[in-house]
Length: 222
Image 1 (cartoon, rainbow, N blue to C red):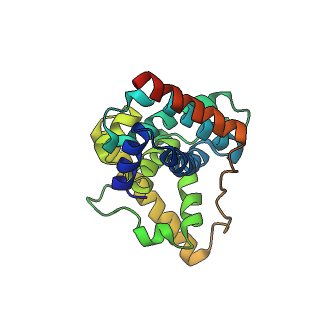
Image 2 (image 1 turned 180 degrees about the vertical axis):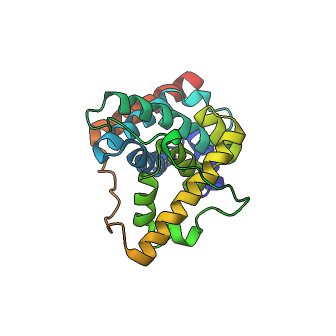
Image 3 (image 1 turned 135 degrees about the horizontal axis):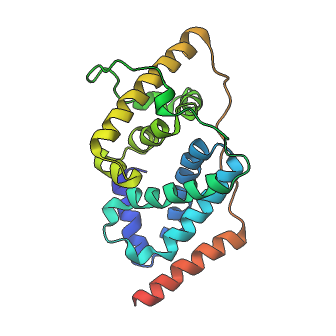
């Protein structure tokens, strides 16, 4: 679903259309799960983040003032939920490579563009996921929002509480690192071909909790 489709879906949800609720939950739960898996590191943590994000979304749905920015709004909530999950998860890495520990990167203007859209949809998508997962967290967060979720530099900066210049710099360096890893995979097969996980179906109880929050917001709005 493209951004226009998401905008129409958000408007339908604000209007109280029941079928829009089901489509919204299925669409954004999948997107948030994928984002959270790459940021948090474990499918179990990603499941919790996806549910917590949707609970917050429906709890605060009356605050969505601009349906055309629903993707950025959802991912700001997801970012915060993921940070909280990482702090409490016993599986969070004890140490991650920081930006200061990386070797200096030669800046080449426009040398590292975004991954090709066909590549992201191809059989190499799982490999791209693995490459992103190996990036330092600061690069990973920017690459996910800009290249996979196709948010603007300004939207990514707002979500991550960074300046646009910092976002541009991290995105450039992250793309360079990805291209080096992808080149290694293509020529030396230095990454395992492991499929990316998918979220488990929502339980009736989880879905009911989301629906109840949404219904409450609609009632209050009226």
